[in-house]
Image (cartoon, rainbow, N blue to C red; front, side, top):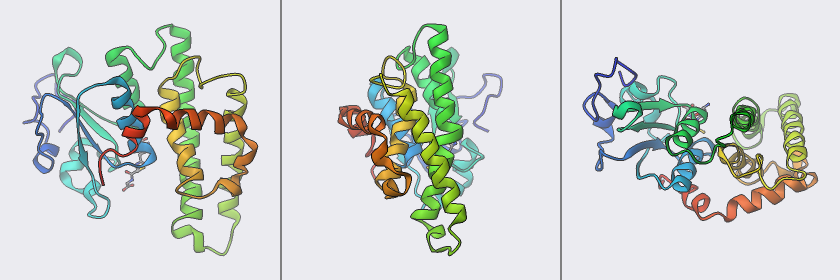
Length: 240
Ligand SMILES: N[C@@H](CCC(=O)N[C@@H](CS)C(=O)NCC(=O)O)C(=O)O
């Protein structure tokens, strides 16, 4: 298992995922991902932080996320996941769940999360708002607008998720009314949230359905986000 075994694990030997995706740079953070809204959170954070890392493509076309090697790192069969060969105490650390990974990376170099305790918890609050609200709800809109659910005759399930997504966008828009970013400074809360907004109005094409034109503050902040060189780089990693 890749998870903690009392500090006895070593990298790469103790991590079966490396048999399918051998590290060429075993000293670097290993990223197992795809450029989806959850995946790019981590590549964008790594680019912003300037941490050396090695990306590995987990292809859904070949069901890589269901392979025993991938499941050895994330039993929940979802990207993204990482291994930091030099985790806490110098020991390797495997992690899944993009929110946990963002907190870990920010803490590793004390950037993208405020040092002040109260501001730190406020950042985590907005990160959880993305993880528990925006991600799952926008994802459901994607299913009913872009994927298999789009052919369902009964539009009530779609409308439920569209209405909830619109409500969430309203909450975000009000938060951004007099702010440049979700917190006073650019943080992991922005990195978690904005790729999902981009996906909702871009790839899913649900902008009109959710009334995106009404959310001027969200639009402004998404535009600023997309101009950042680290964001532009991270959005294309790993290469498909
Ligand atoms: N809560 C998870 C969600 C991750 C997630 O949903 N990943 C999707 C891609 S965006 C996935 O790997 N789906 C593959 C599957 O369900 O088999 C996180 O934030 O890391």
